[in-house]
Image 1 (cartoon, rainbow, N blue to C red):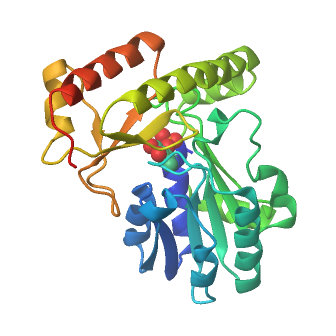
Image 2: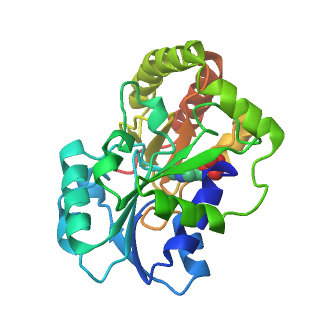
Length: 283
Ligand SMILES: Cc1ncc(COP(=O)(O)O)c(C=O)c1O
């Protein structure tokens, strides 16, 4: 697909769900795609008390009324990967209830050694895996992603729904090359392991900031300073960070920052240090 985004819309167009469940906070495009059709959207709210981690509580909310369930593994914006045991239980329950389970693995490539659900698809035709190449391979402008399912007929039906000519020649060529670039893959895993750990340590030392243990190339932060707008203060340090205030389930205290090069991360950390040290803690 033209990025994973196109595949999300193709999938929804093909499945035509009447009742779909999404998880909040989560990636916005599932809701947008579902709103195009005649679908009632059910929400499963992750809880701050659970550290925003998906819990067994979701199992009881799955009923035969649902046609599909969207899960993002690891989730955006938390970066948290649900427990494998729980994912398998969800998959079994979805099969029993006739629910299509859609797993968005857009960021899973960042987790070294994590295979995701593609190896398990053969015996699970009710599971659809969405993948993006724009994140790990840093080609957001080229646009490339894919959708995997083990039922050939279902896949052919989806293909018929796909927008014609959605993949341009440059993206097609990049796709043939990047997936075999093991040197790049190894270097990316090494960078994220080392620089991600250093970044986490330094972020945690900052006063008034809670850091969630995300496993992708970004971190969710909560700023616990009363009456203090971090997003407004940061541009004065020439850094703009992503406010998560527009994620249903989160509020203006939450931010998402990317793990970047050591030099760039140091700039971000220095700016945060400067901004945060000039304010008073909430309590
Ligand atoms: C969780 C998640 N899934 C899918 C996408 C879409 O990726 P793509 O650039 O391949 O369309 C994004 C983009 O931000 C995302 O965050």
